[in-house]
Length: 187
Image (cartoon, rainbow, N blue to C red; front, side, top):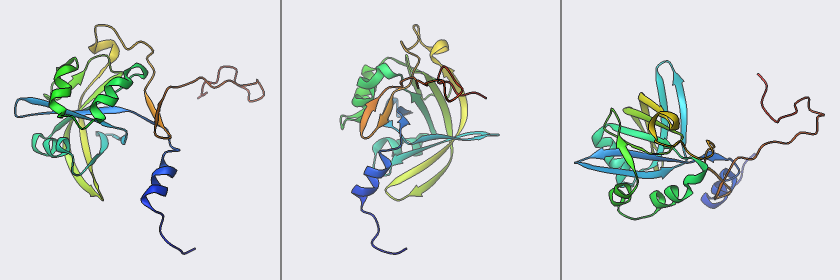
């Protein structure tokens, strides 16, 4: 099959059909915290513990992570849409983070309060990916809402992005014909 390559617009529209979680990736550099909203994040390996984040190559935070060698992935709760929007803005990122309750983790990277989880990493590799850079991080520390926030996130459910909009999880309702009655995945 040959023909013209898809356009960036068509590619973005197709990819918007894939629901993904929303995170804020943070770092600490030159006595200041920085962060930005990221939806391209995944677990890579259990031995050693590795994660991958994809950041816009031209972002200041991406450059600062390269210099600091550390980052934290803060997995946002459904109620934290306003946090995601703030970190997605073009405001000076350290000013935004200064207004969001956080604490420095063991790597020095900021962990936001009331997130579902904070995954602290040390950069072990960086790969070019077109207009993005792919950062491979070895996990140095983990915390969850139950162990880092005074009050855990209200729902315990993640903030999602789907079709270019923020979403929440909804339980799957079955009619009983599928064998499950709760919509839960059976193992």
